Image 1 (cartoon, rainbow, N blue to C red):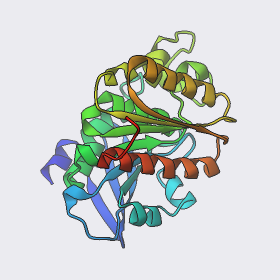
Image 2 (cartoon, rainbow, N blue to C red):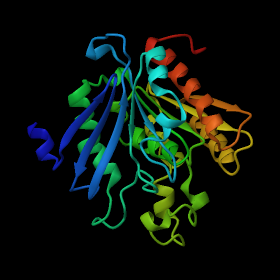
Image 3 (cartoon, rainbow, N blue to C red):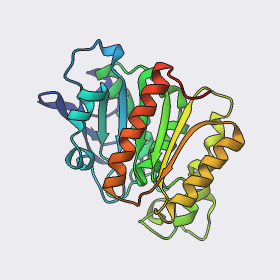
Length: 269
């Protein structure tokens, strides 16, 4: 328990069958609590063998979104993945606010959330993945790119991988400042950071529906950038719009590709 206090966090669990609701009190970084809904496969596994997926929600959502829209317990039991759904809050963008006295989500993930999940579940980086939808697709990519050694692969579903296209929308300027200066928005965009994966064995899984404007063009540009840089990527473009119906489809696709990547299956390479 000492680590929890080092990170100024309290850690407690409400067990519900194979599900857990974990609350982290983050005084230092979030200035509030973060709730994490965890779904573990019912079949017994050794701790090291359970693949883990961090699954992030989108703008105006919370930790319960994925678990109320889809039966994540059934998905966990069927795929064997433990699924961790943290709260990214209404509009945190999973970023550090430019004002250090306000929410520092990236630092929270690095210093509190990931270490506590690792301590509790013994995460193996070769079996650990991260993905999310929309704002969460942005967050998943940025967190993955911050330290790829923590994950085998990262994904984005309808992700906002280029923040410069939405500087005046979705409360983003409240976090990154004056939108007339695009530099902070460009600096925090995954499309401008993915070069860190060039020449590595890491993978990116990119999903977006053709009808998802303006996010389809930026995701297509992101996939093209990966190809240009030599970054391993699986680009999954198909009919669909910015909707829960599409994200349920995309989640199954991501889990399938994460399984293939993790097990060394045929990826055509």
